[in-house]
Amino acid sequence: MTGITRLAVVITHPVQHFVPFYRALAARPDIELHVLFGAPIGVQPYFDREMQTEISWNMDMLGGYSHEFLSEAEQGMRSGLRTPSSTEVGKRLAAFSPDVVILYGYSQVNIFRALLWCRLHRVPTLIVGDSELLRHRSTMRRFAKQISLPLLLRQYSGALAVGDSNADFYRQYGMRPDRVFRCPFTIDESTYRAAAANRTALRREARRSFAIEDDAVVALFVGKLSPRKRPGDILEALALLARRAEGGPRIVALFAGNGELASELKAHADAEQMNVRFAGFVNVDQLPSLYAAADFVIHPSQADPHPLICSEAACMGLPMVISDRVGAVGPTDIARPGENTIVYPCGDIQALADTLAVLATDNALRERMGGRSQEIFDDQDVEASIGGLLKAIEAVKR
Image 1 (tube, rainbow, N blue to C red):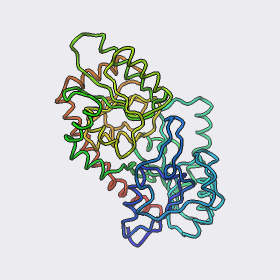
Image 2 (cartoon, one colour; image 1 turned 120 degrees about the horizontal axis):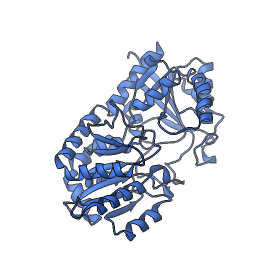
Image 3 (cartoon, helix red, strand yellow; image 1 turned 90 degrees about the horizontal axis):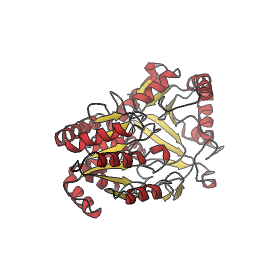
Image 4 (cartoon, rainbow, N blue to C red; image 1 turned 180 degrees about the vertical axis):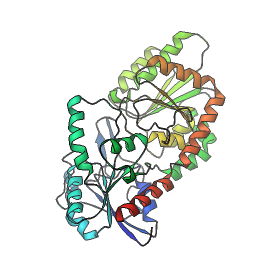
């Protein structure tokens, strides 16, 4: 790519996983980046209803890149179709005068305003999202999308696909294949790579803090304890293993997260005297140590477009057990079946229990899959994200 590209980003609020991407872009001599936020959600504490927790991220969310909050940002701390809303989106884009604009998602009022401004001023736009085709949708909803989405996506110059399922979504709804560019979601890569290098010490310390023996096999769940994530499936699978035979694999389940099912899960685990630890909400600065304590990660969700925990687990060198409704699974995605991931049918407790038994008893398999996780992450890191974006910029500017 030749010359300097003035790149604007329009997004509802600062998202912790995107901050490293912005900083990496801002450090490039060929990119002049400016990010427009609709609200200070995450920078200021906010209540996450699904997590049932007030959240304030323990990290610098705003340093290292140019940004601004739109004038009405203080009016609300929720993200939805109508909020945050600012009539100044076009004005602020005009002040920056971008060559290319990245818009996060397609179903938010500020995004519509920014897209309209870009169309009127003939500025190329790139859409970013994590939508997929896996979750169940009603016939009416599928029909509505089939009519409306091709018309909407036609207004964008290209799409930045975060994974295989996301790329399938864009192509399904009419985006030209040569205008879909792979741009994986980023994580706080430097922190996780440092934790992976220091994994032995972190593992020992974290296990001691949760009273977990060194020789136990730890299955880690990271996420909201909500019905959508199906954390209860893990307890049911462990109970099924316990009923099979005495002397089986000693699996300790470690839950990092909070939500409406927290009390129910704890009561179930206590009643059955299960080897389970509940860490509650774990902030971003402490989360790497829990990955270090684990032997593999479980994600049984029935609806999860492209969870960042898959990238975090891969960077830490962990195998994954994931339901077939999770959008991060694919032959060129971060979770690759038969390589670093075992995929099972969502809600199939028997299949989940069988998978847990295999991983818990086969140390060589876990080691091989964990090594493959790190190799795959090296191909899905921030450099891969930037490379995909640069290709997209070059194409849409032409």
